Amino acid sequence: MSAPNIETIVSLAKRRGFVFPSSEIYGGLGSAWDYGPLGVELSNNVKHSWWRWMVYDRDDMEGIDSSIILNRLVWKYSGHEDTFSDPLVDCRNCKARLRADKLEYSGEPGLSVGGSITEMIREKRIKCPNCGSTNLTEPRPFNLMFETHVGATAEDDASALVYLRPETAQGIFINFLNVLTTSRRKLPFGIAQIGKSFRNEVTPGNFIFRTREFEQMEMEYFVRQGEDETAHEEWISNCFEWFLGLGISARNLRFYEQPKEELAHYAKRTVDIQYRFFPEREEEERQWDELMGIANRTDFDLRTHSKKPEDAEGKRFNPDSTEDLSYFDETSKERFYPYVIEPAAGVNRTVLSLLMDAYSEKTNEKGETRVILKLRPALAPIKAAILPLAKNKPEIVGMAKAIKRSLQPVLRAVYDDTGGIGKLYARQDEIGTPFCVTVDHQSLEDEAVTVRDRDSWEQERVKVSELADHLQLRLKE
Ligand code: GAP
Image 1 (spheres, protein in one colour):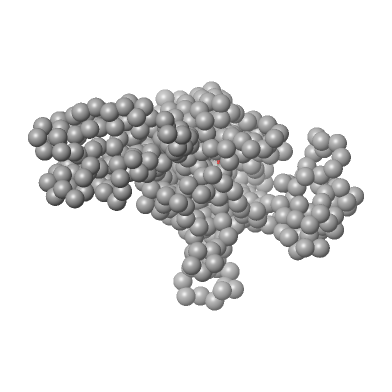
Image 2 (image 1 turned 90 degrees about the horizontal axis):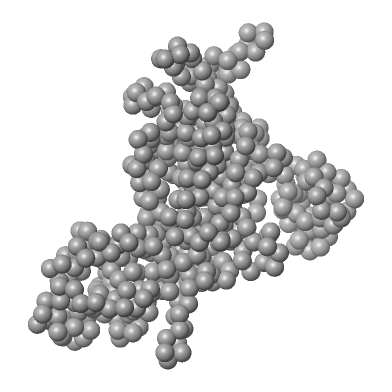
């Protein structure tokens, strides 16, 4: 099974310390979340897994970590200043601010949203989801980039205006030449980056699904034009396989081909991988939403940031850039702007999908139901919990603590003696710990412990001297 809805995960996440509502002691801050002791481990494990798969396991990849605040011109030429906006509508009755493209309208389905939305508002075919009024303003673009100012300048000094990046991708494009020349790479090759991005979303919500501050795992794969479509197909299936490898069930994943009118300004084609984030919704089509996007960005970005391209009259498209981000092919002696395939995933949405997918319930012989988080061992926040069977026996406690410390250098282990053994097991099951290690009276004699498996509840006796190797082997399963 998986979680019946996001609410189940919100409550588990808060109860057990995965994710807390941010700034709660001051009344909170809409749609901002803080990752607690278990959440930070899970999200780090996701990022490590992605980095290992994307960078270390391949021969054609480099990684970078670029600034969050970039020169404003990056966003001018990337097209974000002009086009990175959502159509915003105000309800004149209840003053709610709404995203026009997400509103439901009455009438025949299939009408193209976008062009006709203004007409539908004029015809009063769209109702405010908040109060039901049809008294809505016409849509206007609302830019999603957060603005701030660098240096001790006046707030209205336009020359000091900068943005928090809304995607990590641009930091990669502007470093294309730096990476190319220092790594002496040949096409095809990729540059990967993980980091925070910021969008002033009009309608954030659904827990960590849509927030204004979030983390992305993006990779730009540079290829020759003509080889882009095949590379795109390969990355689409590679990414799907990666999610399956994380343990996400295939029945909760699907592809979604973005229709032309949904494509970002730079994209020739984009295929999303969607997850069933809303299983409780009756209509199957409304159960799915984006987990990641895999776009063919053509040569748009490298070309737009380059100083060379000119129009028919010899006027440079980009008079501000000091570099030409083209590639020289030694074999064909040709210079060109590579095409780019971009797999872009969200860390937070991956964490949410993992929590939802791993959620299960199990009832024991006494009829008690427990939550069990069936996370793959590699992703589990805690790998092993060391539990003394008698906390009033100093020898047992001492041995359990010593075992915990001996495991520490190789895996994340915790010691817990704050309850009876049944309760301690249940606690670990609920947070996805794959192994509970119990130290009992017998352990003092035979230098062995009981290792109990989270999913099968089976137990085996393991020598303390072999425990670290034993657990490490089983963590790879
Ligand atoms: N560089 C391309 C790009 O940014 P995107 O589809 O806008 O593409 C990629 O974002 C991924 O980032 C999404 O699939 C999603 O997982 C995540 N993401 C985007 N906006 C988000 C938000 N407001 N909150 C949480 N995750 C978000």
